[in-house]
Image (cartoon, rainbow, N blue to C red; front, top):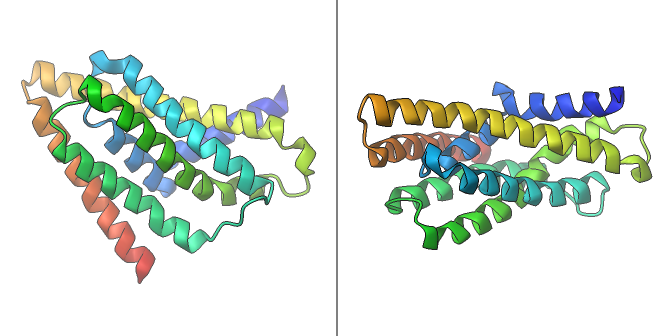
Length: 193
């Protein structure tokens, strides 16, 4: 049980760590178009992202796929920028567009999983590949819980601003997605320089 809690906590800490702001910005930007009343869709969206990053995290953790960390560090902010552009062009999280959002979250999760792989491999030093399943499960569960926590706070802030202060959800989406896009552009430039 101690080992389970160790990897669970590592996952939560890794996703909530402000040093790894790229994953936080992605999750917040991904959910900017949604409202609190759409919590089920958001939970599925976050889970699709987790499934995507679990696949590549496992493959990279087992050294089945090589990871070019510099390329991944450039691709991660590109996923944020593309999500931002998509949100700005999207009026609302309409039902007909939800499936595309799930696909994008899953596909972008594949890229983010490669970003998680360096940290995960450093935790797994000295552990055989056969023993990776339990730590991988615990670590990913921690990431999922951390993401749900972050998105919950984000949605409560969204609800307060749109319901109590009468800010239009479209304006909220534009500000959050625009900020995510701006941060992503800065990260892309820094990765290329």
